[in-house]
Amino acid sequence: MTLMPAAVLSALLVAQPSQGPDRRAEAERLARAGQRAQALKEFQALAAANPDDIEARLWIARLHAEMGNQYRAVDVYQSILATAPQNVDALLGLGDALLNLGRLTDAGDALNRAEAIAADRPAVLAAQGRLHSMARRSTLALAYYQRAMALDPANISIRDAYDDLRAERAHRVEGTYYFEHFDIDVPDTHAGFVEVNARVTDSFRVFADGQHQRKFALDEDRGGAGLEWSPRHDVWVRAGALFGSGTEVLPDREVAFEAQYSRHGVQWLGGVRYVHFADSRVVIVSPGVTFSPRESLTVTARYYRGQIDTPNSVSGEGDNGWLLDGTAHVTRRFWINAGYARSFESLPLLSADYLAIGRSNIVFGGFRFDPLPLTSIAATWQQQWRRDVNVGAAIVTLTQRF
Image (cartoon, rainbow, N blue to C red; front, side, top):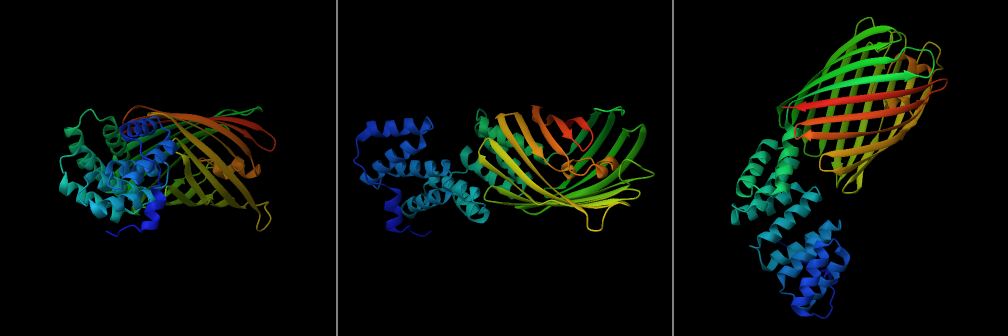
């Protein structure tokens, strides 16, 4: 473990006069009240007055981490461990900060040291659970969470982490109902989709899809299958295909590939989608990014480039579109989302009528509710402004995991 340079340490521990126990109590009150910047100044003053005050330095590191300054947190934790290598709180904090930075190997070193010292401490076991969850070793992660819950059954945060991972790892069945209403004299669209998604290993899953749609008085069906794979903890890919026989409105062939790379809390997205109709086809490329400006909010921005080939299209004709989507975590089991898209390529279900309308303006909003740890209900309403017609669309999905 390397010693932190004195200049860096002095910059992090700003000198101010100490005022004894009252000042410590006030600093802790500020920290617990969420006034982190002021609490940080108070603890820095305490640590500057007494560099051997490890508790104050631990608070400084925690506050840096809570304020998003993970590198500073790592520096302070390492400075504590340089003189107190057996300090479990510093090892735990260091491991957590390194996990936030995506440095799983270094985090594992710190957390393994903590477990060797305090194997019966629930916080140590829960931290190991988080490490193995992020490393896509969900079976081992669940075992750590279960040990932590056995020692501290009243700890809600450990229970929540266990439930989240159990839901992510489980087999699942998704059923979706899709409805469209046109503002012209056209029959409403009714469609149903089912996906069965099964875990093979902690990093590999397979799925099978079935779809039925009644649109423009035509009943059509498709079916297909695919896979999901995480070759590394920070990479995820999904590939699948759907096929129909004698379809006129739905594509007779559709192949989609999606990839995600995660780094420092940001997910970089990339997708390719090939959609083939009886006499036309579309190739869609869609890079994007997902990030969280704050803990309870996730934002996705995506660009779509659709290359359209129809009997009446001009060679090289294409369409450019984009999407902006925000999701807010309102409570433990309730989310709301809203967004805007200027692209028909962003829609999960493409049919032949979209190729004739060109770019669409789409506003959407919805929610997700998890009434039970393994059950989710999601609903979305879309308002689509097409070239010559407006369409309202509703999507309702029930997901059951087991």
